[in-house]
Image 1 (cartoon, rainbow, N blue to C red):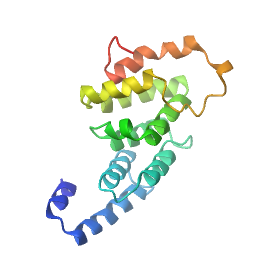
Image 2 (image 1 turned 60 degrees about the vertical axis):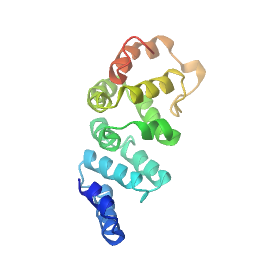
Image 3 (image 1 turned 90 degrees about the vertical axis):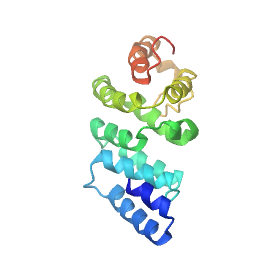
Image 4 (image 1 turned 180 degrees about the horizontal axis):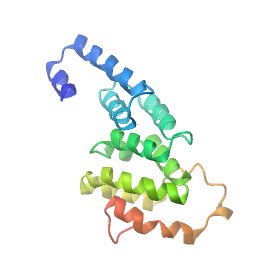
Length: 172
């Protein structure tokens, strides 16, 4: 609400102070991951933060050093109720896609439940667009070793969960 109010006022001094405060919250190690992701998205939307820096912060939040539930909370905060940033920014989409592809089965199962909450709030058109990107295999999958290591049966086993998360039901 504060962000919207300051945008309506168009007072650059107050907006600059607000952005500095948000940046402090987003960059603090003591900030809850959900809040850190949300403040990073607010800074990106306000063009106070560029996509490269947002991608760097996302990469840190999704690194292997971060527990998967904390990483999922960061993603939930960052995405909020809109997935359009992922549809339109391939670098951010690729980061999340690569992170999901890097998860082991147990971590994926735990994270899928958490992320479903976020994806359920997206408008149907956004979920469909994300589903189409995934179905076309447009993700970066930076953690894949080679085509020889690809296990089609294992990959197909996640499709029901993916359809559930994206809300595409019978469609890929």
